Length: 244
Ligand SMILES: Nc1ncnc2c1ncn2[C@@H]1O[C@H](COP(=O)(O)OP(=O)(O)O)[C@@H](O)[C@H]1O
Ligand SMILES: [Mg+2]
Image (cartoon, rainbow, N blue to C red):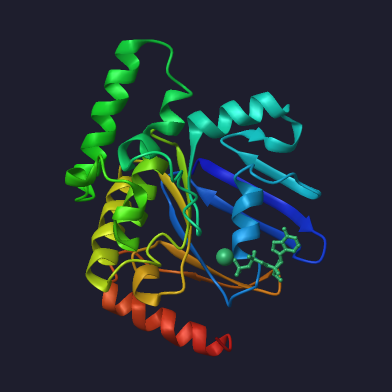
């Protein structure tokens, strides 16, 4: 099976302690663990947002520690998407322009820009926020903003999506809608590495890793054909065993 991401002995002094794992192409992998265990830090490192201090990260076949700053910036823009825990939206732009921001950097022609705008609106429609395209970000709810962040992360059709608590601001039913959408994307071949606190959200995933004090302390893999309630029950029992 083709690997989308390989992490070998990743170290960040005082935060991440010798972390190794692989993610298969098209896999939907969740990371769980208590607050402060290093989940966001891990996501920043494996996505090329943070400089690697020790160990190796191979993303889409390329070792990111060996890329120049420019190569890495281009790689991140065209091959990866990121949903930030703190959202990081620009207050001076409306929702649509926030979503388009990473796309316009990659566009060369007017026709390309037009296509990206169509894609942005299609993504917004899928996330049920298309009527809010020209709202200021202060004029929408936290859940609507989070949906916009997901649209922005998908605008360049990434091969791998990193999502830090992408359902944290959503109601239960919205969270389930978003997870169904992420599940569908992974079925189409997009690799997804996400952080969540929610065992119901994690039950949409193929595998779950448990992070504690910057170390991977557990891994839960599901067998094919298990229902989501069955998976959720397993996750809850597994978390209890790990002292969650
Ligand atoms: N930029 C930073 N500089 C120093 N320490 C940091 C930085 N970012 C996070 N930390 C620390 O690293 C640990 C892990 O943080 P984080 O990755 O945000 O955890 P999580 O996402 O699991 O809640 C925490 O103890 C936090 O205080
Ligand atoms: Mg975090």
